Length: 190
Image (cartoon, rainbow, N blue to C red):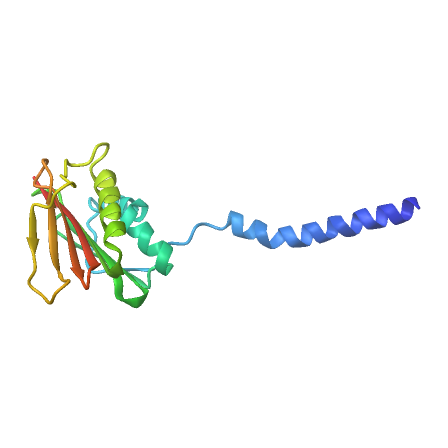
């Protein structure tokens, strides 16, 4: 009887070790970047940390998380650097993308989310989250209760709505077609 119990325990231990061995490799492996970088510049030594910090902040933000959650990993990433101005483009499946730029010299920043089709209430909620994330801790004072501008240049059910903030010419834009948001923009210039 004791032999049977020991053999059973040994078989379970062996099975657990065999199942855990591949998982241990996953845990110890270094995290892989979401997509390979297509770098369209020669990075000056002084710009490397700023670029990586900007990319990290974008990847932690609501726009990127929304695309990543809906469409998986980006299919390509492109970073451009020109005299301190950084632009990063993340392209996802089905022509969805996040394009973000920052220029510290003129205190300009912009995030543009190309989404093709999103309920307007969800689009506004996502813009609010992006404002709170980009201008911590309290946002940039965007008046969400009424739009500053509305334009209807296309067919019925299409146009653009602009919301303005009180800090650094902050604004949020929603472009829509057939009553669905197709792009979201959050920008500021101090």
